[in-house]
Length: 110
Image (cartoon, rainbow, N blue to C red; front, side):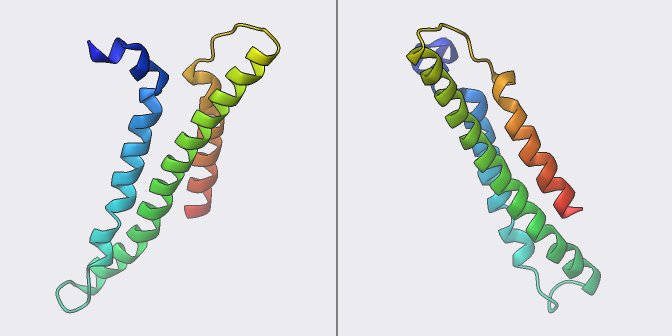
């Protein structure tokens, strides 16, 4: 019921969820960073060492892309309003930079 209120819709809940997921993914990088050779096997430490940059960069990309998409959406609305055009800006209109950043991040990590 509260999701349909005007203030929640203006906050763009889809992108807020992406920011939360990004924070959790980025924050979860602390677990592989805490693994050392004394308590874990060499193979487990290697996996943890490889998982750390993945968690950090994917989390950062999720946060940055969500914020960038929110700003792009606001810019598009303000630009249309300044020309006295009324148009609906949907989530799919701003997912393009999000997907582009995610693909670029994944291609660098692989």
